Image (cartoon, rainbow, N blue to C red; front, side, top):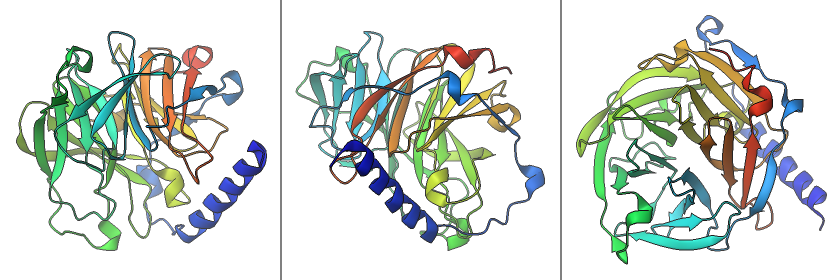
Length: 314
C-alpha cells in the first residue's frame, strides 16, 4: 500500500472518529483570544528520519546542550532515548519508576530534565507525577532514581468530574523561571475549546497546581483541538503549542497570563498524531509523532521558522 493511500485511510478514520467527538460549543465568543494566521506557504515540515524501532509511541522530545535529542514513549519501558540530529539511536537512560502516561519532556535553565507523567484520559487520577533528573548526558548509572513531584489540581474536587468539567488531562508543559507550566487537553462535553494553564514550582515535591490562565484553542472536533506538547524558545520570547495539524505560537505574553500575548497559527498541511515539539534554536523546532495503525507516523521532523519570524510580532 503506497503512502498516499495509507494517509487517505488515516484521514478518513480520523474524520469518522472526530464526527463522534464533535459537540456544540457553549463558549462566549467575546472571551476568545484573536488568532493571527501565518502564511503556511513559506515553510514546510521536513521529514528527517524514521524513529528507532524501540520508540513505538513517541510522546515527548527535548534537546540537550550537547546537541542530542531525547525522546520517550507514552507507555512501557521507563527510559529516555538519546538520538543524534539525524534520529539515530545513541543510548538510553532508564528510570527506576513505571511509565504510564508519560506525555511530555522539558528542561530547566541548568539542564535538569522533567518528564510529565500526567496522562489522565479519564480525568480521575489522584497520583499525578512529574519526574526530575539531572542532565541525562551526565548520567552513567544503569538505572536512575528521579525526584518525584506529586501534585493535584487546585480546582478539581471530583474524580472523575462531570462530563462538562473534564479538563484535567495534560499532554503538554514547559519549564520557565523556576516554574512548570501545564496545558490541559480539553475533554469537556459539550466541548468548550479551552485549554487550562496550571503552574507548579520546579522544586517542591508535594504541591498543588495553581490554575493561572486559559487559552482558546479552537472550534470543531475535540480531537483536532488538543494541545499535545509545548515548549518555550531559548530566548524565552516565543511559546509553541503543538496540535495534530498545526502549531500555535504566543508572543508578547505576561509571566502569569499567557493569553495576554499575541497568538499565531501555523498550519502544517500534514495530519498525524504529533506528540512532541522542542525548539532547537529560536528559529527552528523539531517534532515527533506516534505510529498509527503500524504504518503511519513514528518519525522525526524539522521545521525552519525563519521565513515567518518577521511575522511573529509581540
